[in-house]
Image (cartoon, rainbow, N blue to C red):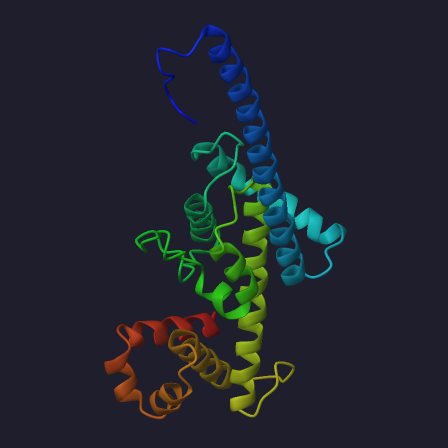
Length: 242
């Protein structure tokens, strides 16, 4: 629409123009708000569906867990900036989740490190999300969100906890199997220490099966490759003895 009318335009025409412009503007803003709300609802529904899929069907136990997490997150939630809808942006969700896991378990979630740069081209999603829940990561990368509620943050934290638990349980089974053992077997202190030592090696090396195989058979190379491995080994040994 033109921003200025020529001086020769009469007051009547000007009045009609302004009224018409106002009506058009109201219609445009109404459509824009509707589109905004529809997009947000669409993202919210997709986000909740993806989270529910990762956590299972839910139920009273899951709801109690979410409420407990929300309660723990509340002090952090109240301290972070929010938009006009009382939602936080993705960077704030990452920050809250990082703080939660560090305070609760001294656990650093790969991909959620505070020093990691986050921008429009790099989401900074947790590594375990990218590998175990690519659909959820793709949804977040779609930039369809207008922010996250406290319940969304709690759901994300609960999902990460579940993914970590499932991943570590699977990893432990792999380690036991490699030693021709079962988690149900009774183990001597020595056997338990070997299980823990190999578990830590797997955890630190990730999916590098070849590297794990080489290092597990060469203790000297292992100490040269992984900094402070002797301290890690001593920690595992002390844990077994206690």
